[in-house]
Length: 383
Image (cartoon, rainbow, N blue to C red):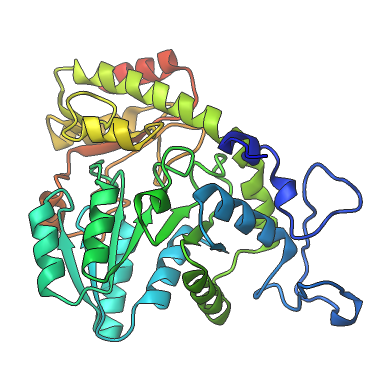
């Protein structure tokens, strides 16, 4: 019997690689480094947790199922799944095409790969389809990578269109799905070869662990990411798997609340004289508003605001009582940051300007608090 995604997320234990004789509602934590080979029977034999672990396999099986892929690796941090993607797909002198508005950690990692392995990186605006096709047509691109929504610019990328263009020119296409999550959109269904995401954020939902995952569309690609994850030691430890799993059953209801709260706050800020611009994919003012509605089931609770001055943006952040000045997103608590100073500090002024981010841009990640309390906090912070 087929079931809805939400049902699968509430019954994670059934994705265990073998039956638990105790019938426990939650899968056991196999917090061990090694396994006794003589005491195991069956098709799957475990030897060392870096290579395989039954606890981690539960989460990998779940993510494979909900993303519609052929295999998954859970990694020890979010950026580790990006690094694993590069280690799997790229080689010396490879060329990669990346959306210019990308996560600061990905940007920094690309610089490292460029310097150490002579990887050629083409940054481009993925909303400019003619430019994307020109780059693919005139360069031997091995990998195309983007986020959607992008972070921090909140652009919505037409995933199906980019997937078709990538494959037309024999490039693999990977989507960082950290903001939307699989509850909102499933990149493999749009033609992507990889869906990767930080489970630190919305998926865990409690902000107490760092982790990531990468799902491959085909068995061949799955075997490759598993090989390199084992070789490079990218795998997640069992205790962190357990912590991640605690938030998964409530992902849908949390995303609905994040979306609702963030839209309310964004609409409020649009009316304020000290705000130049609000960029939220759920607002009609967003340039890809229609695509966002078509491509995503729920809009994440992250958006950007341009204040009328740098001084006011800094004053606002300094004076907030409920909003913390924190990086990351997807936790129950609301937070703000100036991307140019924190999450995207590795970008130059020119690179930030190219993606529409300035020193007066503040990124909001709206949590699950009372919206009334959040608005009061904003009001007192700008006085």
